[in-house]
Image 1 (cartoon, each protein chain N blue to C red):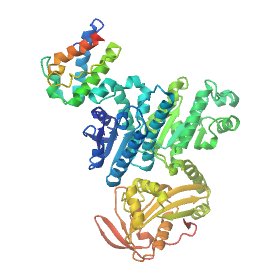
Image 2 (image 1 turned 180 degrees about the vertical axis):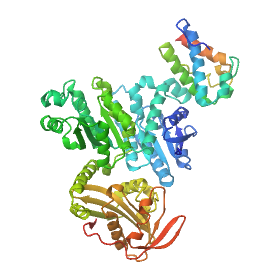
Image 3 (image 1 turned 135 degrees about the horizontal axis):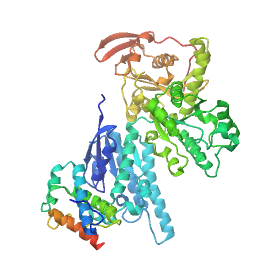
Image 4 (image 1 turned 60 degrees about the vertical axis):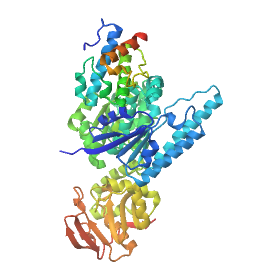
Length: 535
Length: 103
């Protein structure tokens, strides 16, 4: 039995925020949520005051930024808001959620209307810039959510002025969905892989029966439905999602479609595929093993309800969706509607992930064919680029620190600000691994401060190649402190590093319920086939 | 209260919709004691102003579903402690029915 995490959400705005409290129900499977509605209109006071909630939702309608028409003063007001939010984040924990401004300008003068539209866009741009700069800020698209309903249906202008509540219940529901998504994206691990069927999904028709030339995948209906799906998948790939295919076809037929038809997706857009006559659940399980990912990282799309049920029954962790090509209005909104593919942002590391996982699949092939483990490791041509105190790696380093559980000596978590402080007060080392199959990105972090190795961790995907020992060896050398201290702090998940320091030239100097303390002796042995490059 | 039927008049339907909305919100608010209020009872003193606004919005939405058109219910009397129709529950249902009848 697991204990749901407790999450406190505070609301403040220039409208009555109480109806937004219903968003808590949408998060019930992720957290036990408590809500507090702070005094209406007290935005500056709340932002300047003490932090009282894990998440603070600041809901502002246009009247907070301007009275009648968006203008330069409204942009300045937005900048002031951004400064207040940044100041709060600098001194207090928690996340702040803002919203785009739902407003449609009108003017009897066309050029004035253009100026208003421009100013409104710049107000929103200030908020987007803030979210880009501050990991702990989200901006929900309230304007978009209400536009989908139709502003005429969403707004109740009489209620806006009489009761400070401008939204119809349907609009409140739409906004609550956006708020819940924004919070959930921070609580829930994003699924990483979309596995897609081929016949009647990637293209219309069955390649083995209809032939490559007769498949429907072009710019006319119904082929346009499949072309659009491919474009959407390609866009998802650009947003860090891995694409795989499973299809009941002869492999040469499947490959022939990509070789002979001009389509948005190319075969190498897929990190892996299985084209054979096995059950799809079997193939998806195999893909998970190849990519070293859990089945709960997978989303599966197929046009055939039987296949959907087969996978759903045998692999309950996989999220399955029916792609109904006969209902394009639904089929082509399917991917955008999958909540588990949403994320707060996509880092450069996320974007490089496709190549990294493809590389991992190739490494597995090489390992199977190598004569020995040493031959295999040597053939990888591993290079580790180590950067010390590089502010450019701050976001990725913080992300890695906060999500690495297994190969993590102390499981100490840091905010971005705390990592930046560690850079000023000591050494924050970021290790980026490259081998003949690609760039794995930053996969290791060490933090040394006050003669102490505070943090040492490595992403699981880089393990099994002795990279961790070589990085530790480099850090010990760079610190040049013969009395360097280090610690192992046990957690529920880091047993794998319990003896790491013992095995890498550190001497045990004490132990207790909180873990074990070490001092550097000779340090890790050199691993000749791993080359360290100081960046 | 009997739900609106095809033979109900528009005003009866509106009053029933107002009652149904209140019953639903009573559950949402976790205030089961409010479900026992009778037509002569005072609701105004038992809920805060935010709940009044929520009741108004939800009732407007329910009326829109029942009547097929948006009927604004907001009025400066609603939050007025002396004049509010919520001072007597039946007055509130009558107020909603009258608003629908006016169109």
